[in-house]
Length: 371
Figure (tube, rainbow, N blue to C red):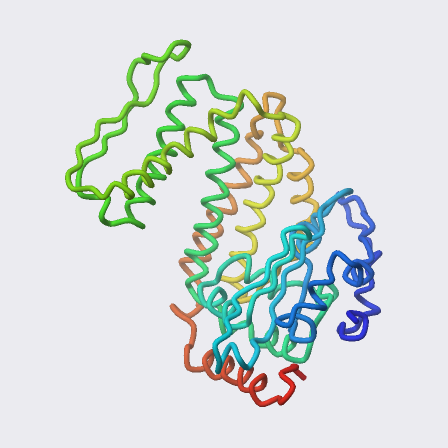
């Protein structure tokens, strides 16, 4: 079935490899054969998918070109709405299959994500054509119009995503390498950030004071620890529970250090570091070139060096050279954000006309199958 509806299937038949200085060539699976297998039967059988799929592309390491031996295969895609989704009582936002790590968004849901320059959604639009396993005429039209969705919203979207990735990276390093007292300071910063995010999302929780600070520990085997003073009135109990759950979650993540697989954690650390740089690179291209470049062939030697531990020190921290690279791309991103000629917001009239054109097509076809 998939070999019948694939765009230029000979170019997408898998078993591809690349050779580039600093990058080890790794043969890819036959993705079309994989999709024809029983694990992916849902793509053929679900009435919101099948021939309604506009495009289905590689995601994760195979999408970025950073795959290694044993890398997982992830797919992301988009499907046209059914007429009943647009005119009737059915709804379709996305289909997720956790067993194969496959996500297919409904067209309208993807449009909303693209309008906000959601990084994961933008990456779906920036693959080389040979990384799309399914690409219908409607999918081609979507790719041809992807620039409609690019705006200065990418600054917050990619900058915020990269910032979250940086915090995860810093958290991993702090858990492994810092003395207890220094680690406690780092936990305090993370807890305060989490509390600030919670208060922004839950305005009712701000009706009081919540002081977090470090003092001499009362817990055995700790030099210092975090304390809190709280003074709230008329705070909904459920809001209080949610706030405490948020703070407990941060501390719980740090306290897992005694149960961690350090070799596995080194791999995660390297992966976080690589994705942080990759996100900044992708954001810079959007802001400067108005292009989405998901598979960064020219940058693979650097990205794979990070991914393979080329900047990992013996003590489990990242070498100063990595921090220099990070500072370079952070500065470049900030400059690109300052100078970008992207509009403040997408042109909603043009975007709306495009979305209406796609949706009218699905309604007009008597059998509900996109042409």
